[in-house]
Length: 539
Image (cartoon, rainbow, N blue to C red):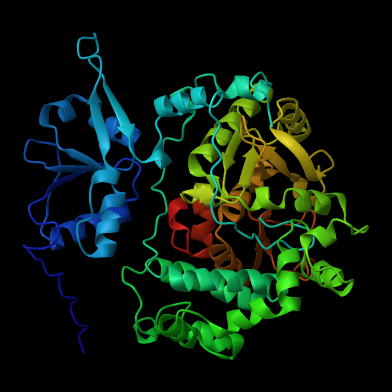
């Protein structure tokens, strides 16, 4: 029997994009994503144009640099004056099923220097997450006089016993460094769209988030991870859940959570209870159970894992104040306790961007050509971050050795790095795959608020693995590890190793035969996992 031919998608001339004539700036956008957007636009009533002309009503771009790069300047924009929007407007309109307001998505084109020789345009992003270099410099100038603290909901990172997963004065060296203009060449040329799901079901995701923290603190990684997988599925839904039947077949919600028998009930049953009553009885039970509540609280302190939290509970401690009198606290745990509220405060994206630029500039002064970037949720495009995950290498494959010691000293002299948590160097000895590690606390210029920062220096030949691991997210990393195991390999941040008896599933020395890949895409391709840009990895 001949296979059925797929029907062509139907076109609705009166769809939500009816009347729009669209030009898409391709620079910086994955071709697959561009094709999907074009298809959706046409299906929903829009017309797409291959070149900018007076017929075009809307231009979409990933950022101002991409816009000017593809158009070779500003003259066509100046001539035709279409509305110029971020691609995020398309994403959010498709999610909501109707055109959302354009106000927060404009790439405004302001005429400045009309009588100047080059008659250049100044493009300003309304969206602070994709700041131009001019805006960044302007913001830096304000740091001396008006350093603002941005507070948001606390986030528990769920650290194990030994974490291994992925106030300055105005005249301080750090303030002087950041208030100098930063050349635009140091900015990423491929700034990604910020990750901003609609999260119409916050009533569900907030409860699941609390359960993640509780199960992590109790040492139940299996249940914790199931909720972790479910949250991005729920928060990306373009509709508000009114019945569990609407989501029973979604990945990470229905069968997956049923198989795990979480709390004796499937994910659908829990969702049904939440949408019906506005609460979850199991969470209420946990929150009223003194032991669970106390262990969960202690587990949020950096450096205290489930076993230690239980030990402190059994010794009679019930509050963070109690813990301050505990003689057995390590130096790192004391710091985690002292800066508990600081560490739990999320960092606005623009602050992370500025700190990344500072780190790049400082590193370049010490070791020209060094590659330094911030991974984690920042690289995945999120609007705020829990900490800074900095991944470092050098293209020549040897100059990275000994770099971290000099780098940390310079950053301390600048009063950027403030307190040490973990510091280990292996590059010169060739131990631990030659990876150097620093975990500590840092401060944003003009502030005393402590932020967690991880510095990881990798040899160039295993840099791709470090970048994959420290970009995340956890769901993707676990899927890649399982996929590697299914193919007879062991994957971690230091390489892809044949799963031989010699390795025993444990990390070996660099002499272990790891495959070599030049970049992340080669790792994905070898494992047979579809390539995902960093901003697409919020699984």
